[in-house]
Image (cartoon, rainbow, N blue to C red; front, top):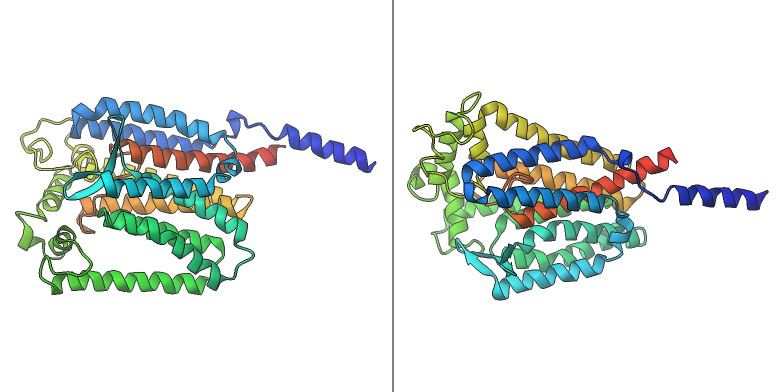
Length: 388
């Protein structure tokens, strides 16, 4: 009788190994695809020469997302150390032979294609920490696990900061905080660490105004000027605050329904050439002007839907690693979108960070689509087990 039960269980497990299309979470896929289509439309207005590349990127990344969705995430996690080392190698190469643009060296040219390793680093670090914590989290106390994880974060964090890329450095810290919170580390320790970071951020902003430009011990010249332009835009209206002021003007001029896609109105701030980086960092400005408040609000709703859906999948996850991955991806997409929109609306200093699924840039698309693919697999595993 016992042998018969074991054979039955083994048969059930084998029958549950395959994934089916009906197990895919289309309530997550749909907002991702709709947001990506909006991105294609916005990029076509911002930079018509890049629209074909954006279309090809979205199509290719969608296929990649579905491919990853049908690969067991536990198999992907087997290469956790390889991913961490590969990440460091790419970031070191950026420092040594990276392509410089706008005072920052963040890109590598591979076969004529520009790659931004700091974007790929986000998903690689999430996968690395998910496996690390699942493997050793129960054996280590909070006061050991947190310093260990923080120590492993320092090399990529330093390399990205030195590019310099302060916005991605901030995103790394946000993702790390969510990972630690989800991992089960004492909530008081996480709260204290977050409070310390917030205090340091306030001190950094305050000292940006206290030091003369070029004399700050931790901020580069352009970073200090951006903070000052955010604090006192009237003093930098013709320089560092110009793009933010033009962005606010463009978004406000869109009113409720916008001026229309690829508008040629003489009052268009975008068509007048007053918005730089309109296909990447300030893509939300294009949406606000051409699609109006309703279009901008719809984009916010889509981002919210994606983040909430990832959190729902995290709530049903079968193990700690999958909870960490889904929760971290939700925080990554949500906070990064907030930062991008915050720059366009003047809520935050100009940080130069893409809007997920919308901004042009192959590295950002690949990274975030892979992340959604892994989350889809986590969701499929729960549905597969339930249906089995």
